[in-house]
Image: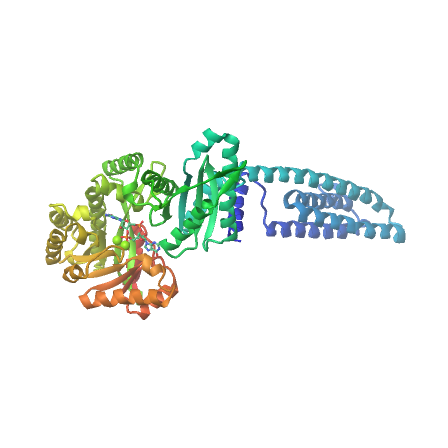
Length: 579
Ligand code: C2E
Ligand code: MG
Ligand code: MG
């Protein structure tokens, strides 16, 4: 059912690419109305044929001239209906034209209005013209539909092709809808081709495609899936409508198991397996390019490991060398030109009062496309540039906040993300002091967000650094809480102020009582240890209500504010101050 919708979406996009004519109902109604109005006026004027002609610049113009002009205009409307509105336009026009025959004929017979006879011939000619136009148009449309189907379909297997797959991915990214992109590669496919011939290889691909298509079309996996063949023995699955990573893995297992059933071609039993790697939008990457490359990296790792588990989720450690080099050069370029910038996402208390903003790093590609942190922060960490990236965002955001404070006197908080590798650098504290001094931002208005992983890497050193920051008055937040492996004993001795509950818990907060109780547990635990608690990624009113019920202190999420340009953040602060 849903995969049909996907097809429709793809076809819509392709329609616009192939410039197929799409005209609105409003256009149809407007043309019809124009036809009716013009016809009524023409008829009205024809009844005044015995009136004296109109004098224009000394020339006598008979009323009949206007009737002719208006009748031609009405005919143009009729032709345009057929040209632009296909079947409905054709049948409406035909109906109107045929309707005129009884009226005209009865006028001729009853009232001997023989002047109408040329009009009857005119009508017949128009009917012939619209029939020719309609059938010609239908042929062109059929051709376009065939072209469109060919453009989105893989010839061998009948599955959607790479182009259709990219279109769907771009559409989902445009809509901001979460999905998993799975790259599946058939193990040892080259072997089939070389030992059994291309014909057998093709039969194998057709059979695999059929099995994938069955699962995707029937929805038997429990998620909304789309299967495509992108080249040779490479397939892509796009999975939507899941609530957890476990569900993604379960769906992929369905496809994996579908291949396990014996495949018999030309009397030979073949045993097929595939390697599946996947990456999620938006948590792993925010661009189609990165998603493809990450899913590919995970798939290659499955192949390399050659064990019984055929499915792997992407992790930044799997980034290919080429990809790292490509992104690293973009980061170096941005650092050199000082073009790394930041967005600010607001945080609110439960009564919708502004608490502050989190600064989020952004870069732009050479073609102006935005690059998101999930695409470059892991690389910056890997190649040792993270302190420079963090530093650039930190400096720019602090300067902006220092100015904002001078202008408005606002005392809201600026929250900065610091990578563990950055925080562990010996000069981290002096860098913070320097930025605070230069920007004029008081330490009390700065909050530094670190992830739980700091407690595994080097807890003693981290705690000492954090204590120093706290003694300066800087606030500390534990980011993405719940996704790492913090131990309770460290957590209780950790001198932080704020726990940020990861979005993955908020996503499923209303999926069952235990999910809500789990978040409630985290909030209570945070409160017992003396932290305030903020929930990340709150998107809908039901989540907000649930968080209100269980005593959350703050929220950050699309429901009340997306990451925005600093100018827009300033407007928000001004509006709040003037409220
Ligand atoms: P984070 O610190 O957990 O930031 C929150 C992320 O969740 C942001 O993504 C934000 O845009 C997104 N988000 C917030 N509310 C919603 C929501 O309601 N729905 C959805 N779907 N998403 C929401 P962003 O900007 O892509 O940042 C991703 C991560 O990159 C951040 O996660 C942070 O860990 C890291 N990051 C961002 N800027 C920096 C930086 O300057 N330095 C370092 N080291 N890391 C950074
Ligand atoms: Mg953060
Ligand atoms: Mg977070």
